[in-house]
Length: 110
Image (tube, rainbow, N blue to C red):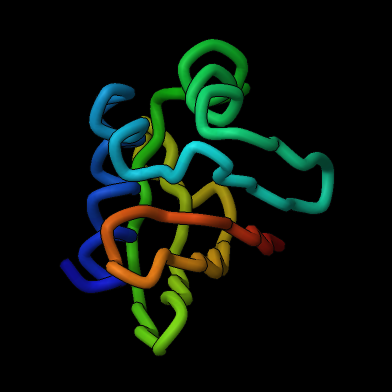
């Protein structure tokens, strides 16, 4: 699997509320860094996505994927259930050497 494939699967799992698949894509020590918080550990991240995120009726519209040797950067928009753009984002994922799991995510948004 490529890093881009992992990123696409990550967004599909979140958008479809498929938390079992989401967990399978993450390394146990996965960490997400964003301006308002850091979530450490795959279990904690999945718990947040399932139970605590403020909006769940959203989809990720990917506009560009930039695959590199250690991961992938993704540019896109978060779209609300009504079809309106909520905000633009850039996610930078680090992947393991075998490109089987996501190790880290740095999220930037406007």
